[in-house]
Image (cartoon, rainbow, N blue to C red; front, side):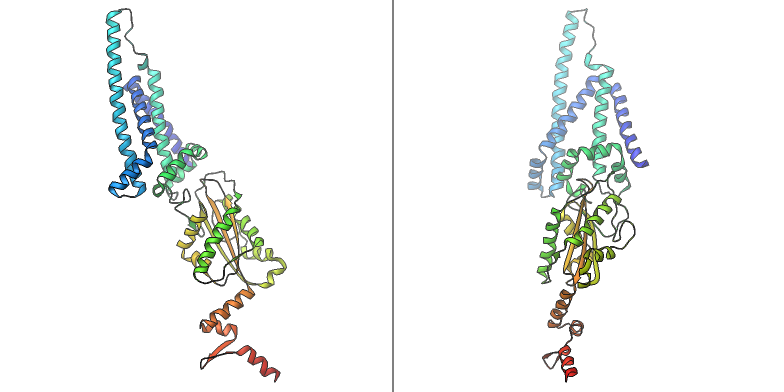
Length: 384
């Protein structure tokens, strides 16, 4: 990808530019800058949470923003302190060297720490550090942007994703700034999506323990609305699992098979001889998320998906989950079917609640406050 190559070129350019600037500044001054930057970032990182808590307590801003302000203030104070310390140390060192030169005239007045090679090394390291921080922020930004996709596709971004510790730290500390998509626990993509910004290569594996967690949440929602809870169907789940893995490898979300075939036919085939016990309807929903809780919130945020999982006509579900790694997230596939006996029970329930359409389907009419079963009456008349 051209964007990825440009990001890599930018990193190399930053290293070269900082190394060149360091030769102008001098080795000792560049070492000071490098040391001050490392000290400032290290102390700010260590005190991120306590400093953020103090800012949050006094100002009342969000936890993310409080951490950001806290790190900025701690980092600035540490940088100034380190600068004063290095300046004091350098003054004493130069005074001592000048005294030695005056006492011993054979001593060459050249500071080994001011060498060009050391300046280039320190400058390049400083440039690399800033470039890596910049690329990390780009990688963790909403993946719908071209710049973020370029950073994900770059070699530098790929190395950061593979190492993962630094990105996880940023992700957990500042979720509202970095987790708009399944890079974290705040976002999900639901419904058909042509291209998901995953880091290649994608090697998806089944994540079976997510099934129960997601199903419990959905059934809790259905209990609240007094609908029948969904039974887990392992045969349909096998279809959902294969579809989820296929979608992850294709880096897309689709209601159809990756080969173009309809999932309805695969579901009916999986039901085997029992297919006649189910209605022809098949509900399909797909989501890309970081964990079951995020996937569930995403389903509720989607009007289509929420209507689907709330629909009382469904009686059984197959859930498939493909885990594509900590950064690429997980693909969730839900396949819903309705047992004919459950459909009949539902019609009778709705009829009892006063739904005229359901009453007609169940063969029940209400006249003068008396509920009469018209199906039974028709049979009696025929027998008579």
